[in-house]
Image (cartoon, rainbow, N blue to C red; front, side, top):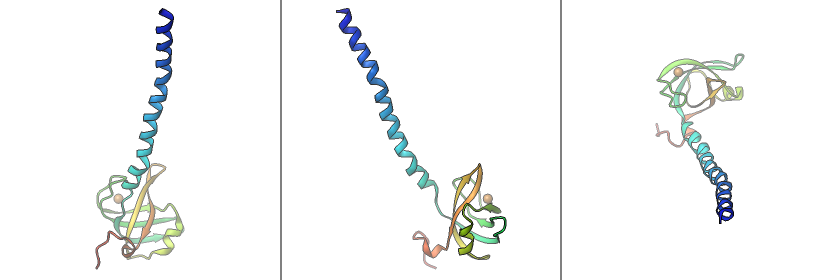
Length: 120
Ligand SMILES: [Cu+2]
C-alpha cells in the first residue's frame, strides 16, 4: 500500500513542471502582441536632420512608450536610411523604441501613408 501511494506522489510531482511550462508559453505568446501595440505612430514635425550624427530633432506629440510628453528634442535614429526619406519642416508619423535605454526613432513616415491619419 505504502509503495503505491508513493509512486502516485512521484508521478504527480513529475507532471507539475510540464504544467508550469505550458502556462509560461502562453505568457510568452502574449508579449509580441503587447509590444506591437505599444509602437504607435506619434505625430511629429522635423526640426533638424543631422545625417552625420544619425540624429533628428523632432517636435513630437506625447509618446506612450517610452513615456514622454509633447516636446522638441533630438533623437538618435535606429536606421539612418530613414533620414533620407524626410525633410526638415516636414510633418511625419514617427515610431519610437528604446535602444540601449535611450528613446530612439525607429521609423518616420509621411502621415498620408498612415491609414489612421485623417484626410487634410
Ligand atoms: Cu521627448
